[in-house]
Length: 554
Ligand code: G4P
Picture 1 (cartoon, rainbow, N blue to C red):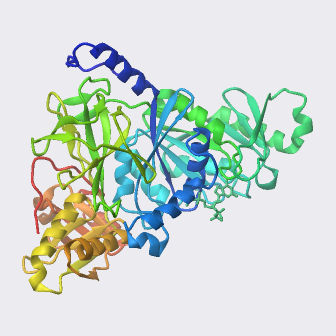
Picture 2 (cartoon, rainbow, N blue to C red; picture 1 turned 30 degrees about the vertical axis):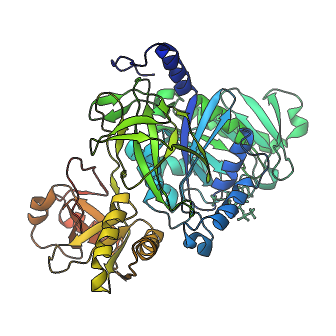
Picture 3 (cartoon, rainbow, N blue to C red; picture 1 turned 90 degrees about the vertical axis):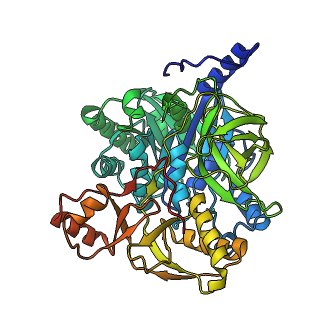
C-alpha cells in the first residue's frame, strides 16, 4: 500500500488507536461493482455473494427486496409501471476477515449515467458474462469506463450449467475485442448437463460440485488432479479435454501478477454458475485475494492516501425522493481518506462552506440505518438539501478536491418544450436543478434563437425521470421532441478546432453546459465518415471534468 500522507493527526489522545483502527479497516475493505448485460445473472450472483457473507438468509431475498421497494417507494411510479430498478445502491457485508462493499448498478437495458458514475466510486469491477452469449453491448460500454480508470477487472463466466460457447473462444473474444490479457484462475470441466466442476490452476486442484437445492450452497469436493477417485467421479473425456486446454493456456498465456491485475492489463477469469452455486465460492475467495483495497486517489492536492488521518470523500450520485414520506434527497459519498464520524463538520470544496453531516445513512439495498463511522472504500448516504452536486468533494483539514466525474457520451437527444410560458420560472428552476443533480446532460443549440434546452441522456429512462420530476416536483408538464441523433463527440480543441475545417456534413454542432462544442451524429457511420474526412479534428467520447467554472444555466 502507498505511504501515508505527511499530515499530522489532530485526533489528540487516543489518536494513535484511531489511526490503527483506520489502517485495519482499509486493509480489510474490498469494494467493487458488477458490470454486465441484463439477464447475465447479476442479481443471482449478488444474492449468492450475500448468502456467503451471511447478509441474507435465503435465496430470493434480493428480489423480495425489489418487490418491497416497488410497494413502498414512489421513486418512481416508473419503477412500478416498468417493474425495474433504477436506483444504484450499495451493499456492505463481511466475509471472513474482509468487509465487502458491492456497488450495485441499475440492471435495466435503459441504464443511465448513474451506472457509469458508480464505476468512479469502485476500486474493482467484476465483468459478468453469460457463457452462451459472451461479450454483450452493455458490458462493452461499461468496460470502456473501467478502462478509462484502469481499474482491476475480474471476469466471471456464468451459466456454465447450460450449453454455452467454448471456453477458449470466450477467453479469446475478451483478449481480441477488449485488448485485455486473460488469466483463467479456474477452468471448467465440461459444460451444460455435463458441467462437473473446475480446475483451480494455481493450486492444481480439482473442485467438483454437487448441485445443492435451488438457493442452497452447493457442496464442493476438492482433490488433487492426481487423485485416483477422480476417474470415478468425472468422465475421462471431459477431464482430458480440460487438461489439454489448460496445457494450451499454460503454454501461450501471460503470467498472473498482481501488478498486471491492478493496472487493469490482465483479467483473472472464473467459470461457474451463479444459479446452481457452482464456482461462486472459489471466485469470491480468489477475488478477495487478488483485488485492490482502497487506494490513493488523485486530487488537487496530489494523491491522497486512504490512510491520511483527515476525512475526505466525493459525491458520485444524487438521488431524489427515495423515501416518499420524507420527500428527501440523498447524496452518495465515497469515503476516500480518514475516518468518517457522525455529526462531523466538514468543508464543502466547491462552496467553501462548513457543513455538519448530521444524518449520515448506511444503506443496505433500500434499507437504511444511521451510520456512526465509515472508512475509506465505504459509501454513505447524506441528506442533501440541494447543497451537493455530482463530483463534489467534502474534506477536513488541508483543502482537497478530487478529480470530478466526467460527462459520458449521451446516446439519446430530445428538445425539451415548456408549452406553458407562464410556467417558465418553474421550468428554468427544474431544468437547472436536474442538470446540477446529474439527472441528465443539457445541451444548447448554437443558434441563439433556439432557446429550448436539449436533453441528452445515456438511457431513455433518464428523459422519463426528468419529465416526471419536472411535473411532480416543479409543477411543469413538458413535451419532448426527439432529435434523431445517436452519438455525441466533444471537440477536443474547442471552438477554434471546430471552425478550422470549414463546413462539416452529416452532423450538428451544439454547445454543452460549459460552452464546449459537441458534435451530434445520426449514426456511427456518419461519425466514421467525418473522422475519415477530417483526421485532424480530435473528438472525445468522454468529456473531461471542468473545475472552477460555473455551468451555463437556462
Ligand atoms: P440480471 O440481474 O443480470 O438481469 O440477471 P438475473 O440474475 O435476474 O438472471 C437472469 C436469468 O438468468 C434468471 O432467470 C436467472 O435465474 C437466470 N440465471 C442466472 N444465473 C444462472 C445460471 O448460472 N444458470 C442458469 N441456467 N440460469 C441462470 P429468469 O427465468 O429470468 O428468472 P427466475 O425465474 O429464474 O428468477
